[in-house]
Length: 312
Image 1: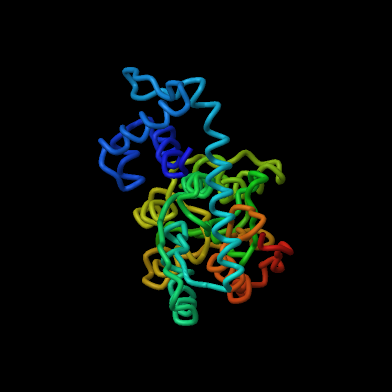
Image 2: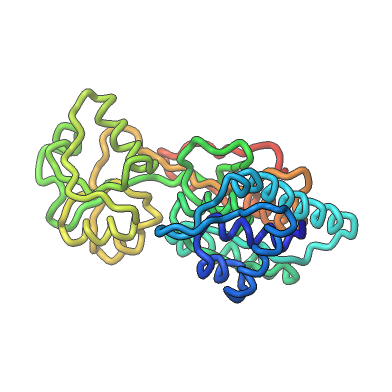
């Protein structure tokens, strides 16, 4: 089973669609169909069946999937091991990041890294947290920069690179008018929040639950910090967001910061990568550089930096 065929098979299994799979692996649709047929002929089993909803993975296909993933991982590790013996650091590293992190946190550091390592080509992909983890597990990206949500697959490793303070923001004129910032007053206000499962939403819900106060009414639930900032600017509600995500809006006076009762909450910015016995030299250099050069935001409420001991 040639790795090229297995890569195409996994792309089709993920998308359940020949056209989308062809775009992912950069092949013509006819080539994707030919490769799947070749693999089916080699294995003597149908891997997909057609339905009204698209392609369905057969029992044989489901059986093949974990083996295909492991074979491709071993191919990558073999390539990395050989590169390590030659001490070559050239190569491609594909980075995935949240839009906020990519625009506010990575540009200057990536530029410096590229200057230090001109033989390493960098490619950046923007996606949401869930999509970043899927791309990482599927091998579409080598490392993801996002906020820690916990519950990580054991095949993945992570390192916290900074603790980003969360702040409460409102449109000018919509902030507290009297009484100071306390949870009881906040509970009477409308919030624009991220969806359940997001770290910001978790911290918001936890604060009210621990105080024994009913959670505030949600004016809207959205998946994008940028959308939250725009809704807050429009006066839809107030929001709890990472400071770095709204720094420019604060500077422009489009939103204002409100007092948050008690200790300032933080969200851990992490980089996540796949565990391997041997990491590609280019990726290993990037992981080490990120660990050394990122620093927590200077804030009284920040937690100390934490790092795992290995980059394997």
